Image (cartoon, rainbow, N blue to C red; front, side, top):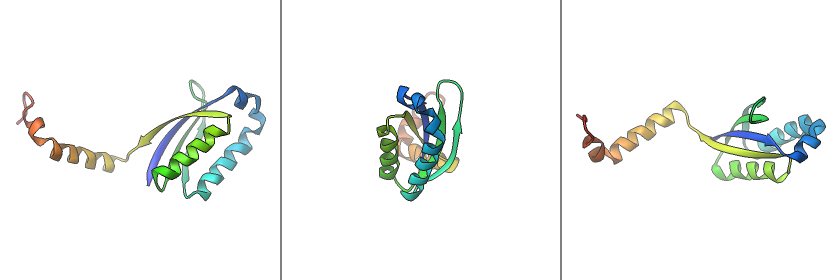
Length: 111
């Protein structure tokens, strides 16, 4: 599974169509579920972004197909980041150390 953090801004068209936004959000969440994904959380927020969501998908292709579909609708634009659990991050750090042990050991102060 891959996790995505999606930061979303309404477009001018999205602002004009705001009365339909609650229905469109529910439809998008349902569509994502039908694609095999799961919306872990979805918030309407104030500030630079209008919506924030954290989603989980079986793979990158499904995640990106969903995100492209959201953007293609014309009501929002997304900024997307990958999200990793602490366990996944720990594994990455361990792999980094294994791959770059010689380089890391040459740093000033390294033991």
